[in-house]
Amino acid sequence: MKKTIPILILFSLILSSCINIKFEEPQPQGGKDLAIIPKELQGSYLIDEHDTLFLYSNKMEYRKKDTTETINLSDNFILRQFKEYYILNQKDDRDSTWAAFFVKKKKDKNPIFYIMSYDIKDSTIVDKLQAITPTKIVEADGSVNLIVKPTAKELEEIINKIGLKELKLPKLSK
Image 1 (cartoon, rainbow, N blue to C red):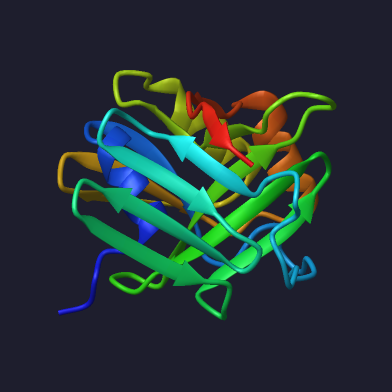
Image 2: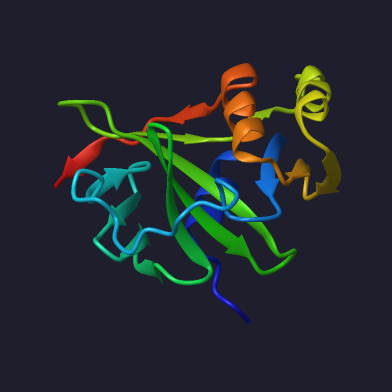
């Protein structure tokens, strides 16, 4: 059995009963893969009292109590830059889609982490997304996944019109 991978673990922690946007390709579409995670993003981040996320130059670790899951930058874990965001893209082998984890570095401040996940009670999300880009709707495990393949322009429109959900991940160290 394949181990659950870090970004997907984070998604599962926060995304039950949510509408999640997943992608057919790493984002932004056609973007250049970065070989290292920038120094200003590297460090440890508190998810909750038992869980910590570590970003190193070439990998991410997710530690939960006594277990550690590690994923190296590779064909299945891709880092790209888009506008003011770094996007950590992770392939979900269960359905060959990509989860995207957005990180924004603000000058002289800790990075801010975002995901594309919304309250399932917000019935306008599907309509807003479909107005921007073709959307496949897949329901599984109490969540609704919206699968899209946006152009870079459409991705920017999704961010601007629908927005991103901020995750509160305080930085513990560099």
